[in-house]
Length: 410
Image (cartoon, rainbow, N blue to C red; front, side, top):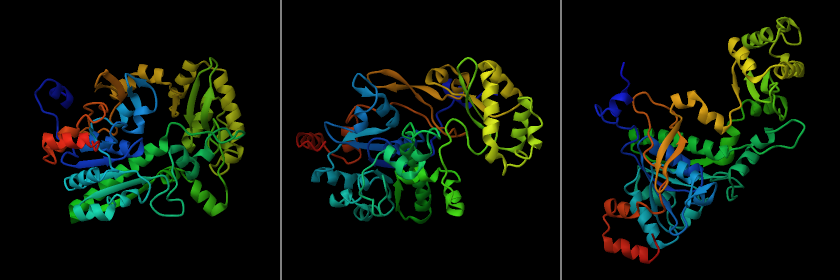
């Protein structure tokens, strides 16, 4: 069977129409959560127009490793977008936003609550211009509540959301979760919210706004922790390298490498015991039931620590695989680049980057069978598409654009 991708590469088929083609997004956001949401939508066909402050741009342009004035971080999280400069503080810039909103389906923004309202660009004003508009508003603490004016980044979201407390070794202070996952989780939740709102809009003609908060994204992924405290008053504590509820965690092998395994289910626990030569353990009253096992988990973890310490890395991997126990090496980026599974799944792709040739970047997630997302270019230079957007979408003349540039609006 010939794969669709092979036919496209041979020129026998055209690229399939992407599912979000025809959706236009105006991104009034910077750094991570909002731009990541926009990037996800752009990968599946949405036209994403990102605005940045003239002469300065998104703060992400100055964060992380840089090559020839381009940060890799900005290049990854702003790929596939059209980038324009626009001063939202200026009345002329605000008027351009209103004109763009009339031609857009979605607005993404991450200013503190009330800022856009002061500029005449809040939900009520934009909804009056375009009743079908979906507006996603991303903040640290949400649009309402006593902390709604609080500033915040991912670190604040993970601390207030409860995940920082759970991260690290049991006998040490809480450790910072990395990378900035509350930003990425919020971007993902927001993209889901936008798509559900668009589905409602398409069915009813009615737009709506979305309230997304960094801390709530962190809080939402706490597994059973909320119910445990709410019902039993038990505060879940840090588990460190090993899991406190069932056999599993990170263990060092004889040659100093690290492997993670997990055995939460009864059949996996039985396989684990057979692997380490202790098939009697599942019948031991301390371990026979999943409800009793957590109370005696240190015994199992000590056994596993000894088991891994007595085996070189490759032998331990082979035995875990032979007993069909979920496991993985702890992968560094060097390991990932060398791994055939990543390559087979196209999870490392070479992306055209202006002035840099190509940049290795993560592939598109998730993978759709008929309309897979694609990446056309990395995050571009500041203001790269300003003239194109103003002329083609708003019909401005070259003289009008030149005047806006002279006034430092764009």
